[in-house]
Length: 87
Image (cartoon, rainbow, N blue to C red; front, side, top):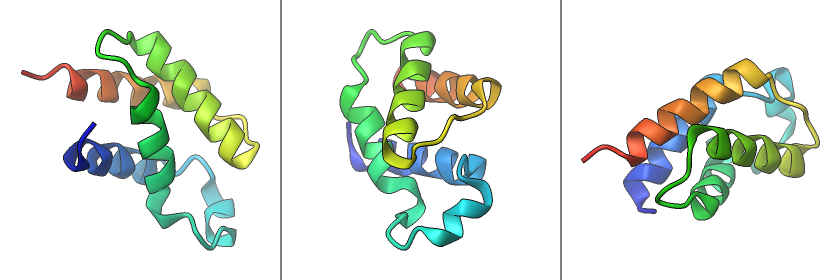
């Protein structure tokens, strides 16, 4: 995990904005930087898209108590998987 990866995941989460309108009510959201870091912290080198998907769901659920759209979550997981496996 490096700063560039954190920034990319943070951007993906910010563009998705799984909190929707609730995001304006959270003062320390910081464009999902904490959640991006948490997701990447738990992703292993050999993690599959499904494993990353479960991590995203778990991190966002624990952080905000929300249930995220599974289709959108899977799309973000795939993008993270591609990013991490680029050579």
